[in-house]
Image (cartoon, rainbow, N blue to C red; front, side, top):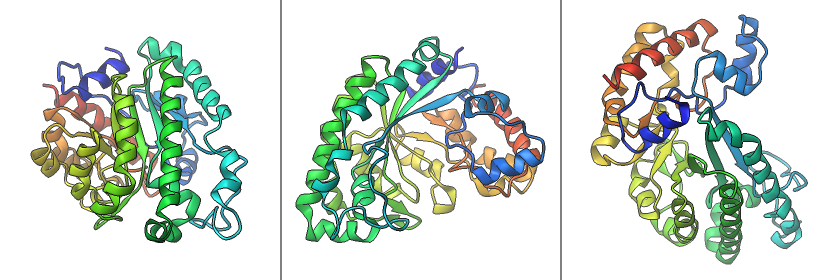
Length: 331
């Protein structure tokens, strides 16, 4: 069975598998890789490293909405537009034909391996909470919901039109196995915006784009750190079918989520904080997740990048256990 076949089946709740897919959904931190290289890890690119550890290779098509020439914020989380620049001033860097061509090129580069089933492909789209925040800055973005609502609507309408073009360009070459909206709209106590703001500023644009994605047969996810449990009904209303990374430290309990939303797709969710504690703790975490693994529609993976506290030997233990439990789940 090819990696792509496993991936498609598990997202359809089809457990007629030799094993559950084994993926590393988020690339490792540079600090983690630097530690591992000192501990004997060969110098490799991402695809080589996935093969080295025995993962089903899942690769990402980046559908960036901004060109590299976009002016930078003066500090992390600061505004790109505001008193000095307007949205019109930077509009020439956004949603361009060159960006669409670059995404189509990525698809062409992956096409042969994807058609053969050797790789899994996901496409990343800037989300309707994420992208206005990038342009406006973290704090001004929240004020803009009240002070500049027309601007947020304008940004998100332009972004939605761009996403439709991106989907058309990619699907003229191949069909990705999933799409994910980058959002990060929750923290460890829940959503960073109200249901009313979500309904007004995000939902209309999800509803504009998601049907266009789903008519291609592509599964649609949202990528949000933090605790998204309260938001799951909101996401379902928009047509979103699943989420990741489902951080345990933020209070995400996959067994409860599966009981409440049995057809909601789940990726990641393995508590990264146990990985430096040894095999007993790591095995206990797999045992916690095993009922969800057996229920289908779930792919276990580290819940947001393996931290540098994890030694190469501990990571090899994680890999050994992942191999064991991805087979145990289909017995």
